[in-house]
Amino acid sequence: MKILFVSLGCDKNRVDSEVMLGMLSQRGHEFTDDEEIAEAAVVNTCCFIGDAKEESINTIIELGEYRKSGKYKALIVTGCLAERYREEVLKEIPEVDRILGTASMEHIVDALDGVLAENGQEPSDVETSENTSSMRRIYLDSLEKKPIGNQKRVQTTGGQYNYLKIAEGCNKNCTYCVIPKVRGKYRSVPMEELIEGAKALVNQGVTEIILVAQETTLYGVDLYGKKMLPELLHKLCEIEDLKWIRIMYCYPEEITDELIQTIKNEPKVCNYLDIPLQSGSDHILKLMGRATTRAAIAERISYIRSQIPDICLRTTLIAGFPGETEADHEESLSFIKEMKFDRLGCFAYSQEEETVAGEMADQLSQEVKESRRDDIMEAQQEIAFNAAKDRIGQVVSAVIEGRIADDDDDEYDGSTYVARTYMDAPDVDGYLFIMNVPYDLMSGQFVDVLITGSNDYDLIGELTEGKEDENEFTE
Image (tube, rainbow, N blue to C red; front, side, top):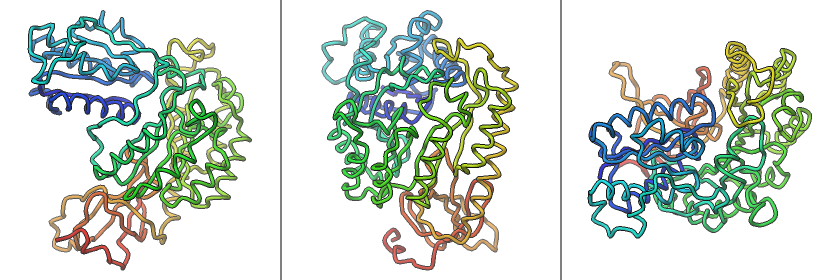
């Protein structure tokens, strides 16, 4: 059966989607991106903020029309929206056949087979599983369940990089966030399973692994009684042919000296940290339930930079949190100007039901939230653009993403390639455009590049004179 699999939301959701794709492929199913030729659909949903929730609902409704017409033999909804609004989805969108909660993705095959059997169709050529006869519409396993570790995955990232989800759930209980309710408490994946999963990705050609979780810095505390992210990094660095390891979602108060020294001393670990801060105002940090202060964050960042001078720091902020005054907003603005983050994203606060912040007084208007978000991004633009200009003249290692179509201009002097440096996480950061490349490069190839210019967030460069690797990737 040809299945349309739609994965929405974050990169952690992408990992779940790839695991479910792997299970379905082992069952003999095929996949398509074409809605018109698909015979069934699976939607892995997100509900973290209002826009994500709306996108998920609209996608389900759109594919529900194919199910209603009979073109699709099944429509299955999984992920955070499915966990949080399971009863509402089934009631309001009756075309949905099955709901899988966030801890229930290993039931994807049984759920699909169950729908097909229910409709009097042969599920597949593979022997029918014991649970196929189940007519239940909702699969809802305990959120305390051990997360799935080393599983066969169907890669959807293009091949040279992929994500490794090292833990599930979160214990922080920030007042604006529903993740603990839909994903459960923090649960680490056993280290041996992560190593095997990473090796499997590298064997498929992945050269960059990106560690993700709701919070990566607490990895191992539940299984081993202490933070084990540094030990995990050491073991991952032993994998042959793995070139880069990138760490996302580090809470500042949990970044230990040991972790900083590991990043500093392990060549394969990118000098890059994603540290979501959410605000630069102590008043708002307290309202958010964040276990840190502006001064503590500044101290930690200062220490990180003293130990790793070329560290690239990324953060995210929330603008317009309930009760945020103009003075609070100005504090956040002054904080980002003081810290000069290399990368920064900002989101207008999204009021979510079943959260403490959602019930707070002094909710701000959408206009104010968006205006403050724009203020922050405008301030960050100046910082980022100046930082890009300051990199002119540096030589950096970069991984090739692809080639831009050749220019027909008679003066054209070679191909232009798109690449990423250690400072650029896929999909969220900038690019490096390598100009006038006189020979073929391959996606995933690492090259040294001289930075010759910048264009807003992006860099422009040329290959260095050393071309010792030229023949390795060309006929």
